Amino acid sequence: MNEKRDKFERLAEKRVTDVIKKVRLIGNLSNKNNYDYNDEHVKQIIDTLESEVRLLKGRFKEEKVNDNPSFSFKK
Image 1 (cartoon, rainbow, N blue to C red):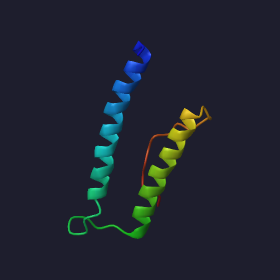
Image 2: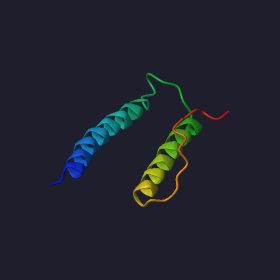
Image 3: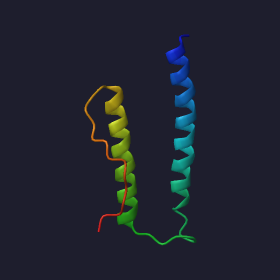
Image 4: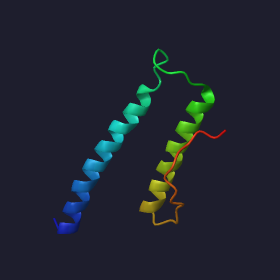
C-alpha cells in the first residue's frame, strides 16, 4: 500500500472508533434514572447526528457542505 492509504486507514480506524465511543456515551443519556429530558431533546440530538452523517457522506462524494460543527438545544 502507499503512504497516503496507510495514513488514511490509520486515522480512519482511530477516528471512527472514537466516534463510536462518543455515540455510545450519548446513548447513555437515555437513562431516565439519571437524566430528565423530553422527546424534543431526543429529536434534536438525533436530527443533528443524522445531519452530520449526511454531511459526511457528501464530503466523500465531493459535494459542498456547510461546516458548522456545533450543537445546542434550540429554544
